[in-house]
Structures are given as C-alpha cells and as structure tokens.
Length: 126
Image (cartoon, rainbow, N blue to C red; front, side, top):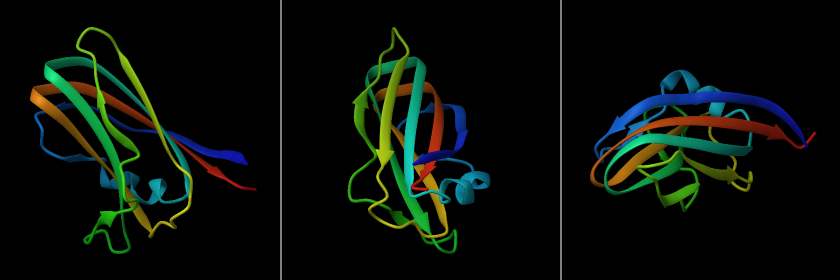
C-alpha cells in the first residue's frame, strides 16, 4: 500500500452546533482513494463540554448527498479548552465512494467554538 495524497482540506473556525462542510473544491480529491486516514487538530476551544464529529458524505452529482458509512469516521469526541486536541479516524475502503466526497463536521455542547484543521491522507493498495 502506498501513500498517494496528503492534503489539508479544512483550516477554519467553527462557531456553534450547526453542520459545516469542507469546501466543494475538495470533493473530487476526497473521492480519489478508498482508503483514507483523517487527522483533526482542534485548538482555541471555548464552550461547555464541547465535542467534535467528522463523517463522510458521498454523491454522484454533488447535489444529493448520503452518508458513506453507517457510523461517523470520528465519533463525537471531547475536545479540550486548555490544550490542543488531536483526533484520528480512517476509512478502510469497504464501501466504494461515488465520484464526490465531502466531510460533514459538527461541534456539540453549549456555545462551542473551535479552530479546526483537517489533514487527509489517501492510500492505494498498489
């Protein structure tokens, strides 16, 4: 298995509990590889009992999206208001992707806010 891509696909502040997505410019890049690893770096966190969730969605037409897997690649994880939190998740490639993939990001808790950076590394079997 060889590494093919490693890209920073998100580097922004998330404010509140609404769903946030990666930019459409990464939709095709995120769908290139079935085996993908995610590293999420979260800092500058505020709020009460904040958590972070990451889940992939895929689509063939970039209009109609569905969850790629039954569970999130990073389940709701506690994030620290006093230190940098590093989270990891992965996609083993058991479900083929449609032509486009985006990441669904969400904070939870009371009045959460955080700076979130996401690196994605894609791998091929050959």
